[in-house]
Image (cartoon, rainbow, N blue to C red; front, side, top):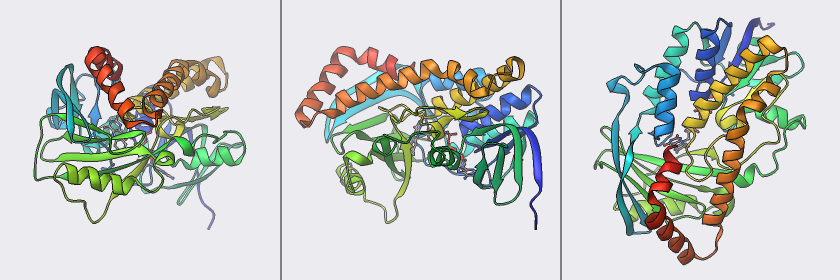
Length: 365
Ligand SMILES: Cc1cc2nc3c(=O)[nH]c(=O)nc-3n(C[C@H](O)[C@H](O)[C@H](O)COP(=O)(O)OP(=O)(O)OC[C@H]3O[C@@H](n4cnc5c(N)ncnc54)[C@H](O)[C@@H]3O)c2cc1C
């Protein structure tokens, strides 16, 4: 049976923080928006749920001061500590709060804002392919046609894959910069601070984050630097803090340090994880997802006026983010690049004791 073609101004593929933010802003400006996701919402998402000051501020300025209803913040604290293997090397306070959310509730709250602004949401709709010339999105149900397409379908983006296959994007360095992250929820013990553990893996770290009734314990590291070892490293990390390894490991990829040659094609734009916009050192991605979701909407609204391709407008808007991520990738390679574990420890000690406040500024701002 022939599939129906549904027509919209903008078709947004993926309803995580990046896609739902773009959808909210575009619909608010009167565009007819389709937001597609393969999942039924609210859906779970493997994540530490940590919002830095810059994320918290950006989200409030985008969705309004009333966005963070008390129920949406699971925990907040300015306490943190850093370990090298089992040894604590710093216990301190940050001037700014770390906010912890539950991604199931948080992503659904953004989606609700989008729905309230008039977005047409299609759940259980999986993007399979696109026609870049005619701006068609093929899914397991209908075909969607837009004047613009936003690819917000996360780290395994189908649309990015299509652009790579066509030779428009170059995936050189993509695999080398992929982090594998594993995480468990522990309900047996609680904590009131973020604890970061170095020394269990290369080019990555372990974490213990507070949340309301549970503690989130995870590890994330570059696959290319820890071939086949990350599961074992996670087990060692869990055992070292007195936890048993689970039978089933929940794992997800994070693009940490891949800087694409292009961030779209004409009126197709890539945002958030689909574009590789994640901090290469910390793995923070929510800020970049919301920010680039916002910028993609702005680029499209500019195109409606100046008639340039949205990609041209988007490129000028994301310039600072791209240079910032490039700089952070250099720092990451410097900090984690040494082969000598003692040098890493020494580096960390110097940075923490001499530049603690600068480091916190670097993370929060
Ligand atoms: C273990 C882990 C811990 C993390 N911790 C933090 C943290 O503490 N703080 C932080 O800031 N960041 C963290 N991140 C990174 C953060 O989760 C991501 O950067 C962020 O979710 C990116 O948002 P996004 O909207 O681009 O993509 P996503 O949130 O991944 O959303 C993509 C959406 O697209 C949908 N989708 C995918 N494929 C298709 C398809 N073919 N068709 C239709 N829909 C599709 C998915 O269902 C999903 O809803 C963590 C990541 C991991 C893996």
